[in-house]
Image (cartoon, rainbow, N blue to C red; front, side, top):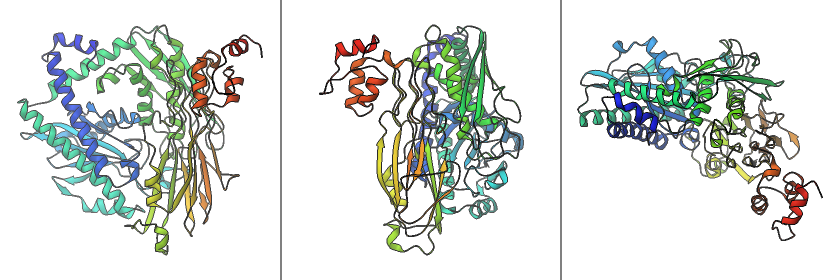
Length: 590
């Protein structure tokens, strides 16, 4: 629903509020249908189950008109920036109906090579009127697949902005290059075809809309959308007190900790996020190109203005400064594959800075504590020579396999409510179902459970992380590559007196430490355990409602010991809250 700020801006507009609501909702529905097409026709669990993708409609200037609300928030601003860069390679006047542009260059697209962007120009009555775009994390583009790489050349196939289709005709040479550089060529081409189909649907539906409303051009509508969303975002920023607000989060890094430092500068209706003081880039694959840094920076501002529909105009009041040569703006050819290890801490640093404005200037539900990250694992090998009995009913269509499975830690608490358990933030990726994992590879999930006491204690508790224990049923070695694993040495931080969440942990064969950045070879019968961290809490835990603590204990989220030692809540043997004993505890007694 349109905000009051957006509606107020309509008074000088050629579109009345009702008309704009209808048209804007129509654009969003077009993008949602495109995204549904992408998901339902995809081949890999990464796209179809984990939802590692985003889709958008853009105007002829490369400005976002509408973006699906269900994809990755981390891709909020990337599709616009990527489109505008691709148009520098292929100016709009050179494009023809049926053209499709492609790139996965990390400095142009979404920060690492597996994220591939497809861009389709949309023509109406012979005139270029818009673009359909999507980005998806594809299964395998070659490379070693771990954070051990020291430069981009170890990480796989890099596709500069190129034409995948010319006037409707496929560029078979480029398709063949992509196939030749993937361990799973059928899977990756299947996902690219899903991306193509999504953009075709977006084109079809947009043309139908333009015919229905007798539009010759979308630019007047886009100009309205950009102006209104910019005004609406400025209306959110302007009441905030001018000042510099600071935040810092420490990442485990590769060999040593790395600092993500931010200064949020509010000046009138403008905001700037400056990463001065952030650690220098490192010769490992955990650096983050500026495009993704920019997008991750936008996410907290989208959270403080959730009522504003996503469009390019909403981003205009916010400037991002990231010093060259840092982990948030590395110089080419830095290694970047596991860039989320570092950059998913950025939003926590920004929320930490903005928490100084709660509750006097920002509603409590607009900031959140540090979340437990995604714990992913990539399993890689070849089917060649594998006995059919161990394929467990799955008929492989490739000689090799490369499967990516994602499992979430706990969400950080808001300053007004508990964090959700096993919910990814800021990724918005879904947990891949166990059945999908076990069907595609000879694996047995022996345990998948919530980790008690993992949510950071606070008046509002962080969401709990999860534990998975997986055993290999294969009689051949399988390479296991942890992905996006962080917060083992430095757990998710709390806010405003809240406690940190429980740190993550990786082991195999019950007791042996598993390297979070390097490959582990699973021998037949080996098992590994991933314990994703819990989210940070908000406000001191002794302020938490005692009855809520008792319910947490009953639900298995908090132990009796933590209830007594941290929350200062006494329970009866039956599990109910003892009000008198709790009052004594919280008064300093025992």
